[in-house]
Length: 401
Image (cartoon, rainbow, N blue to C red; front, side, top):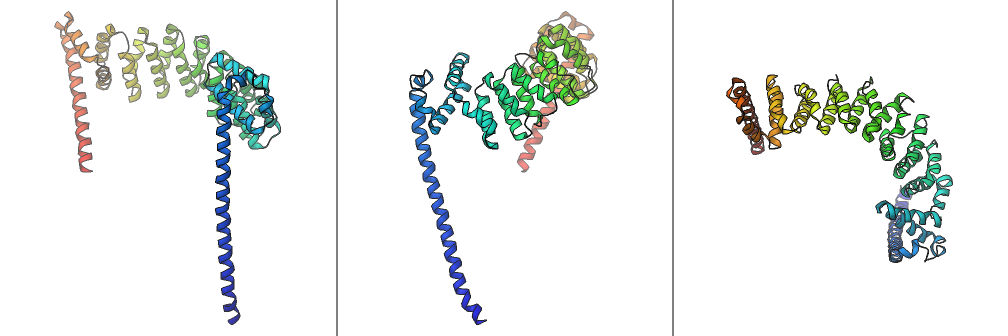
């Protein structure tokens, strides 16, 4: 017991000294790190200011490239400034910057890093190559797509999306069709939308390369569609998958109106509610009088969202059709449909004008005209009562809280 009591004070002293030295070392490290980072950012600011001030001389090579190419720090500053300007410049200025990148060999080190660097270096290099928006690096990025590392595949996919050309889209689609791309569908979809917007037709040839690819390509095609792919969308509108039918309905909004109305009218009767909703939204964007029969059918839909979007679509049709629309909706004896339509007309401020328009018609002297006006006024009154009741309930809850 005596020996233990003699050792304890010495052990406590050693522990206290070790703790003190550890804390001192940590504080010294923090101070050194802050000093180093302060010097780093000061140097970065000075170099960035200098290059920005002489930027036109840099990109026209009046400042020789050898002044900054051999210095790793200066080269990184020039690269960052060039890539930032590529993203924010117009088409003509972007071509000048891309020519500077090409002639100066600014990205050659990045090409090497994308192939032989560490995992983190390869990812950063791939993203930097994509920011140039230069087709010159598509082959390098496509090679990275075939790597087994999903971390690098995602970086290459995003980089190809930033380049945004048809060739970049084909590079992605080839790897997707081969089943080698292990990247989230959201990333692939975003990149394909960027790349294929100028030429949606290239997506069509990849519709039959597999179930997963079929769904992915159909979703992208629905977002970038134009009149050139209208017939392909009409075929997709008969697909067994409801998501593909919904994507086709979305794309048909950009087709020729008469062709689109015929296909969308069929989709508006689909058994799946979100397909009907997508069809109604596309019909609304067309604003074509030929869509009125289909919209009058979906105004009585069992789904509330479909009814509301249908009411919005009907309210956007030519104003001379509104009395006919009100008459047809009233004839359905569906109070939810009538309420949806009158509520939408109230929202856009067209209901009062419609009442005056109905009042001026000679048909108002008939029982049918009187019943029509009465139905509209009754619907307006019920909507107002419902809103006031909801407002009172909210005030009661707030007052209780």
